[in-house]
Amino acid sequence: MTPEAAAALRPAGAMPAILAAFGLAFGLALALTPPIRELARRRGLLDRPDGWRKSHPIPVPRLGGVAVYLAFVVALAGYLSVVRSEDWHDQAAQAYLSLLLASTAVLIVGLLDDLAGVRPLSKILVQAAAGAYLYANGYRIELLSNPFGQTLALGPLSLPLTLLWFVGMSNALNLIDGLDGLAAGVGLFAASASFVAALVNERWEIALLCAALAGALLGFLRYNFAPASIFLGDSGSLFLGFVLAALAVRGSMKSSTAIALFVPLLALALPILDTAMAMVRRLLRRRGLFEPDAEHIHHRMLRRGLTPTRVVFTLYGVAALFGALSLLTVAGNAQVVGVVVIVFSVVTWFGVRRLEPPEFDAQDQRLLGLSRPANERSADLYELRRRIAVAQGVAELWEALVWAGARFGFRRLELWRDEGRRQGAPPMTWSSGHEAESECWSWAIPLPGRGGSVGRLAITGSLLGGRPPAPDPDLLEALSQDFCLALDRVDGPSPAGGHPPRALPEPPAQT
Image (cartoon, rainbow, N blue to C red; front, side, top):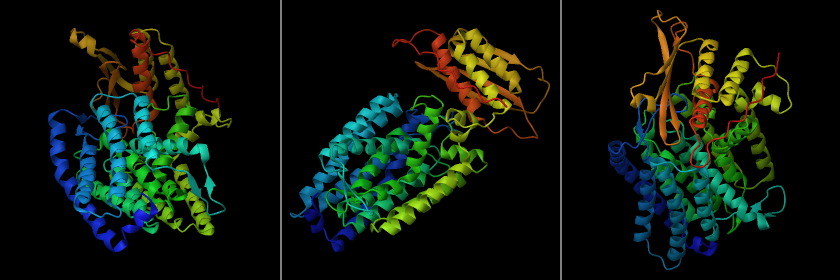
């Protein structure tokens, strides 16, 4: 949409339209979410707890993103069907249609992932194609307004940087979607910041879109906040991240192409920070960039003793703070931007250090050339992963589990393999000899394979001081992901050639 067309919609006429779009999207989300929840429940489309990354106690329907999408789309469609202005309507409708077509493609690939699973590369290709379509229709980063000097022209870097922004933000919201109401609430704060930025920059069409998205998210949060009765799912989180990326870029435009860089970066700083930490963590540990783990910001806060609700409210406050900082940079004053950057850097540094993320653990610091001795537990974890990585059969994998049971003080291990259960075979079991103890805790770890579930690992231990121990994410990761990959490998090659043995981790530094 050109600046002339956008100027045709003046604030006096824009605000009633914005309020109408917000209210309509809010009402639609409230009305559409319950039937979609019931449909997902009847079809068995549930997000099941795994005792590792997913903290919810019972299976929860996971198609909430469809409700958010429909509320957003129908609200805008209703507005466009009512408003008729020869001066700007056709161009505005084309801008909205471009975003809806691209975001629909992202929603569909996320929905397929929810239903049957989609390879990460396939999702990225669809997101990149949708981003390229938006790039061709005016959602692009070509010029960066610089408060410290002249405007920066990106030239040939414009397309790859725009695609990176769309793909990165779409997946960033997906990564942070780990607690009831977290991704939807963070998205609501980001949409609100983009809405204010769009008003300041007189991007009335983007303010309208932001209002519709905010209304849809607020209505959905009625059912998504703890205890959630429905989740966004991959369809919702990928769609939400993609749309927020588009709105943040267009809403921060001071002209048809110049982007105020700090506005979208700060408005979406929380998911960007979490994603950046995840990428660094996986590179340092020599893991695949798309392998899931339980080390995201919200996971670390939970392990520090905060309740899930308190974690969500704390991260809401962080998202609101970053959104407010982003709005301070809208004016483009160099001194204000400098202060904002300093405040953001200080808050981020102290917040990250307080969480003691694994990016600063002994093993990872050794990879960075730093020295910090590891404790005995780190050495045991390394040895467990080493034994799993070099195992040549199921018997050797079981021996690695038995060794871990003795080293980590477990009372009992049971390995149920689905193939064996179908044939009536008993589980593989190990006991420490302390079966007489009455009070115990237990973990049930599902074991996914190439074609679905291949079994379950049950671990039992003694209560210490009347309370179960906090789940150790590194140990759970070794007992689930590492073990599953190794079991997949020793059971025989897959149609694509099988899984190679996982690279051994670096041994811990010696004291």
